[in-house]
Length: 107
Image 1: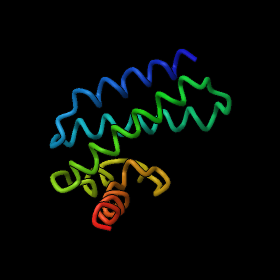
Image 2: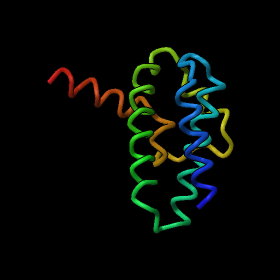
Image 3: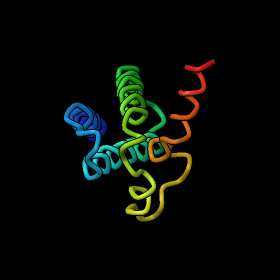
Image 4: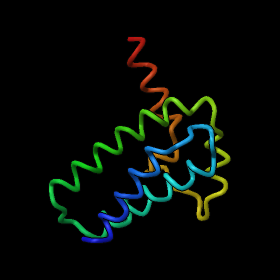
């Protein structure tokens, strides 16, 4: 349980201090989110407070990704990762939900 709390602490810390045009900082945030995902796959039972914290931080991440998408080269960020991130890891592919968000706003 301590590990997920530490990961959530760093996830929130990196999100709060994120310079949205800095590729290195985006890499750190997305790496921590990937570690959280690995932990979630291993541990099926999590307290409600942990799930709620992850959902809240994910919403913040989505907003920041959609704002930063025009300025940050996320394709380059994916190339820097080894192995290449799976498309299931939505935080590495902001162009998908960014376009959907724009479509919903115009409808």
